[in-house]
Image (cartoon, rainbow, N blue to C red; front, side):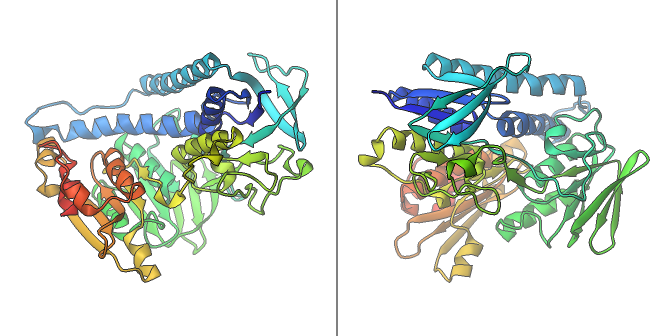
Length: 459
């Protein structure tokens, strides 16, 4: 008798869980109300990276003279950019849907609500969005992975015209003349870079004394330096408490009385879990004060057969983490945890920020080690010493490697520079596999290549 596994939410966690469980023999139903692949992923993350890539191409063209070229300044075509963003998201959604269907996953477009510990009311939609009659499905195992939505405080009146949340900016109807970004975390700094490269004047409101307050101060300082060099205005120690329309512009009010005027404002102050309306309380699933579902190392809620993954689980809000959570959930549902099974270690998840230069890190950070009183060895090598960085005309940034001084085991690392999001994967493998710095130093990398800096940092 096969296991009936119902998944509510078709983002990275839900998609990976559905594919894995179906491959292992489960009868899988996936319920998704917006887009298979996930709204936060395909309507937020992927579009932002697509726009960043366009902005990066514009920026690169402006540096072309350093490569021995004479070119005219590139400018953005909003209609073409909008079509590019749409087509990428649509292609990913379509290919994901076809892949799941080919694996036997039953996909229902609609919403799901728990009406008992093993029962889910599914309210499907027609292709045009018209509702169909709801029905109730019984499930042996349930995964809720409904993601999150941008956080909007009471003092911010979002109008989608001059006052925007991230999902309304891919792209906006026009490139803002002067964009005021509220929020200096990962999402905020990516939007600063994106719109600055597309030609906007940008002011970033920083509630603390550095951008990226959760990151290595040296990494944050490198990004701030690049922002200032490109003309971004940083307003530090300013906590926004209001956004108002002022004719054809906006004014952002700060707690200390400062007023920041611009043509547009963009709110990037985090997200809230999409747990309302799921019937979690009625089913007996515990939900904490923040709206998240607490989970154990198997992603189980307080009810063994009900799992939570992705942003809803309150762990690292990364698509990569959500996807591997989904795979681990499927394996647990199908009993694979009774064999050799590695639990997720969230402290070893690699992450990246797609600014210019890119920023990426994994594992133990230098500042955190010092705060814990842990002895570490830190080595740092700049890209300015790397031949490939010189050839590419972009020698900004550095690689920082953190290791255990007694064993040589790689504990973490940070990269600031071109292609940091790709290069960090090498350090991520080293951290996960408990490799030593000697393993990296003795690896024979391609020459010339940016990756050689990793080997140099390990010496």
